[in-house]
Length: 391
Ligand SMILES: *Cc1c(COP(=O)(O)O)cnc(C)c1O
Image 1: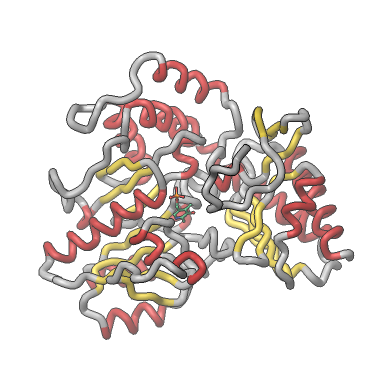
Image 2 (image 1 turned 30 degrees about the vertical axis):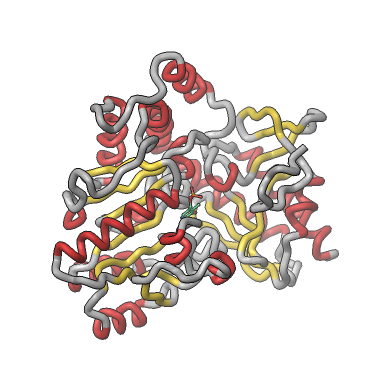
């Protein structure tokens, strides 16, 4: 079984068939602590009763109509997302890459509307924006792009967390219409920029009439300790993309616009058959409502701090551990060496984690974890790292 799958992934030798809260179970009923959430997707935990109820309700009422008709749950979800983010308009997609595709198309159209015929978007080194042609071209990782040339043109690259580089681009490149940036680089290795970085980009965008476009597909939906990571600074982007945790497992993405990005799209400019359908929107509305409780973001802050403190304390004498850092429950541990093997070792300890950028252990635990469960993650991970480093 499985010989007919394209080998786009190299899955670990385990398969889960049940989940509840922060745990999943394999076929032999072994219990695993999920400290990854399917890469920041099931942030409210598995089999959440209110979400299961919303799924059942809508599944037995109406799955799909079409964007040719009004969709009440879509309008309701858009209202809620705008209320929470301060944004003004939403386009719904089925995935993160598609949300970013919408953002890229919006930026180009904005350029043309402002008489810039060859619009360019500034993107960052080590960024990740998806696997479609435009989003892999925007991505700052050669491994994602290699073999798929010719890439989509119209992207200018700058080092992350480097304002001088952006200022130089502003002086030299009059075709730039937007900056697309992650508030924390997720796939790039949980790279957290200096405080004030986003505010400075905001200023640059205002001065140059650029759109500030934030990819919060991984950082959004309370994961960073705020509903959206940009809310750690007193700014608002012009474009904001979301996906991952927006549906807690139901595929749904969103591209939000405000300010000068508002009303750029007109009928006929963009679309999606499935995007924003009644099912996805009803579920995402329930997810977003639950997440909008400030206590959840506060818990992400507190548990993130607890987790990092515990790891720092227990790994203090391990000189293979280079750095431990977090923003809320986006947690990264940089190792001296390539450390993919830690994932397999952790699996033996019944802990689900991930390694990105070859030497960064990434934890994206459920936002609903309590103190005792956080200690459990720390203990299992410390055991795994010690076993890996033999120290
Ligand atoms: C996961 C991710 C994407 C791509 O989302 P898909 O749903 O896999 O298309 C884009 N940007 C960031 C920051 C991500 O973490």
